[in-house]
Structure formats: C-alpha cells, structure tokens
Amino acid sequence: CTSYILQMKALLVVTLFSGLSFIFYGFSCLYSKKMKAVFIRFRIPQYRNITGLLQILGGSSLVIGYLMSVWWLSFIGALGLAVLMALGFFTRLRIKDSLPLSAPALLFSLLNAFLAYKFYTYI
View 1 (cartoon, rainbow, N blue to C red):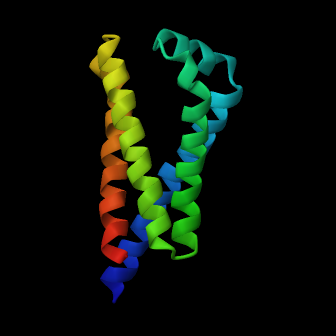
View 2 (tube, rainbow, N blue to C red):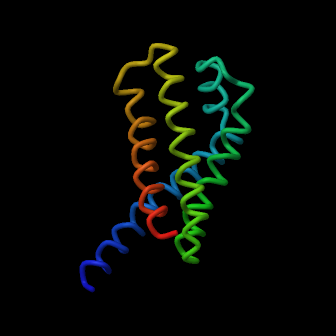
C-alpha cells in the first residue's frame, strides 16, 4: 500500500512537471516574440500557433486527467505531447541543431511516452 502511494505521488510530480511546463511553453508559443523567432529559425512559422495550442491542450489534459482520475484524458494528453516532442526533436535534427539543443525535445518526448504508458495501464 505504501509503495502504491509513493508511486502515485511520483506520478503526480512528473505529471505536474510536464503538464505545467507545456502549458507555460504553449502560451509562450502564442504570445512571445522570442518563440516567433524560434519558429522562423525552425523554418516552420506557420505551425507556431497550432503548436502552442496543442501544448496547452496536452498539458491541461495531463493535469486535469490526473487530478480528476480520468486516466484516458491523461493518456491522450501524454501521447499527443510525446508525438509533438518527437516531431520537435526531428525538426531540430533537420536544421542541424546540436545534441544539447535537441536533447530537451527528446527527453520530453520520452517522458511523455512513459506517462502515456503509465496512464494506459490505469484505463
């Protein structure tokens, strides 16, 4: 029982970290001039707004799904964010960014793939 409680607390921390990070970065995508320049550098400025919206939706789905024990909602949010960050990682590779610049996208993709797996087991 104690092990289960610790697992759920750890899952909460990781879920909140990822979810709140994506909500923050989603709004940044929509409203920050710096992020506008980043998407121009990525050569995909036309995807900035949809990326921001998907980040906000995914992050919100993670947090709300966890807090309300609606595991399928957290699963969908995590899976969507894993795919979004995998695409972000490949975009960085395509423009020949260094591994240190590309690593956060890969790590967030893997983190959200793990979360998707965990939430899938609760469905």
